[in-house]
Image (cartoon, rainbow, N blue to C red; front, side, top):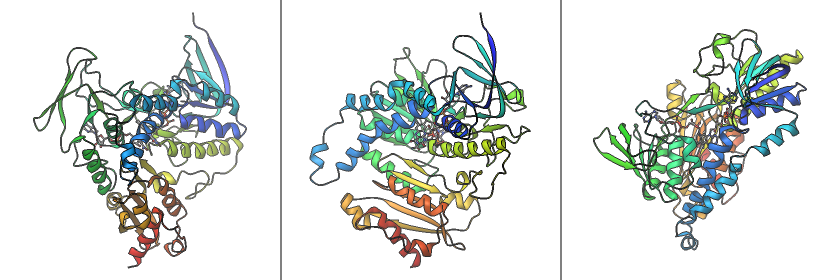
Length: 479
Ligand SMILES: Cc1cc2nc3c(=O)[nH]c(=O)nc-3n(C[C@H](O)[C@H](O)[C@H](O)COP(=O)(O)OP(=O)(O)OC[C@H]3O[C@@H](n4cnc5c(N)ncnc54)[C@H](O)[C@@H]3O)c2cc1C
Ligand SMILES: NC(=O)c1ccc[n+]([C@@H]2O[C@H](COP(=O)([O-])OP(=O)(O)OC[C@H]3O[C@@H](n4cnc5c(N)ncnc54)[C@H](O)[C@@H]3O)[C@@H](O)[C@H]2O)c1
């Protein structure tokens, strides 16, 4: 038998991934009672099947790659990785797929938790079907934030018995497959090809475009492709999968035919072909929206297609910038907007104001944890062209720096900044090379503060570090 009860809160949050947690944290901090609804694990994709496990798999691979190029250290890292130890570390970093720690954090933050599947049921109302079979009706005084995230988008070409891997299986696998075909050359495909190739798998990556990481500056994908090939991976560009069939049940071989007529046999096939919104079964039809579509939100994270300014879409589900850090930034903004509207205080929606997620369109930082690392923020050259923005492009080979040679004698890497010639500010930056991940925040600060080049000239990078690339880029621009 099922029961039904109704509970009223100031704010309802659907989805307890990193983004939902942060929205709730902000609204509780603003004195608004808040409940968060979660159908799987508290912590979401990032903690268990995305950022945390993938980076735990990659860290030993990247450190070994760097160390193998340092004189005196290279013999010490010549052997294979200790795969069971790497996987045990990955399991720890994924909290063994147990969310008790996150449940405790919700409690300490004063956020109520309701486990179950949440669906909108008209304005400011959400019904939750709990694991016990009960139905709870939640009513919001002020706001409902949809933070249901995304799932892997699969191409149409497979039947029920292919059992392909998605980002979930590839990040949580209990042992390396002997042979892995990766379809897709975006971030997931490239990072996971790097990790599993280093762990002993024979990886073949199939990309329909002409290189890796097609959304980034071309030199980034070229450097990573060269390293992946040196590591033994087979990269097939300008190629698509025509058919993929698994024979002999879930553990049988997969036979793949490619558009160039060649055939592959694999133990597993990963679709790393992008993301789809988790909006197909969240009651969007009850508020006049279409199930299964991305939720469009404005810069205050409000879904303006629904009248009344009570519905918010935050994180992956709004398709603005699919990163944990950017979703958490949106969560801080959304929390401030919800609190301001609840307290009747005006919104500051000026560019870079407290209630507008300006960085989503001006400065989204991203690090791809490959060999070498790729770090980018703001515009790429292609994006500037598409947007019709005139920019000056400045390149520098990072390997010319003393700091880079100290890092690794045969350092290979490139830095590019895009400069707005009228305002004389940086509007985009890409660094590709070992150890550049931690350099990225300097570029993010330069873009978000709109620091004039003449002032950056006074920001002195220490010798001998890779950050001296800033000085060289400025000198190159000055001619
Ligand atoms: C392999 C991989 C690696 C990645 N690595 C990085 C990285 O290194 N750095 C980075 O910044 N980003 C990374 N990302 C992206 C990052 O994982 C996402 O941007 C982030 O998880 C988005 O957070 P979110 O809270 O919006 O959604 P999610 O993390 O997807 O959380 C949504 C939550 O909502 C719940 N939910 C959904 N529907 C309902 C419902 N109806 N009722 C109740 N609960 C519901 C889900 O169960 C889930 O817990 C990676 C992604 C992948 C796939
Ligand atoms: N280090 C990080 O920050 C990190 C790591 C992993 C993922 N992420 C986030 O997760 C998101 C999803 O990553 P992703 O790699 O799945 O998506 P993506 O959009 O980055 O790349 C998907 C790739 O698959 C290709 N593709 C799509 N359909 C295809 C088909 N049918 N056949 C062949 N190729 C096809 C696309 O052209 C694209 O290049 C990223 O946008 C990123 O924001 C971030």
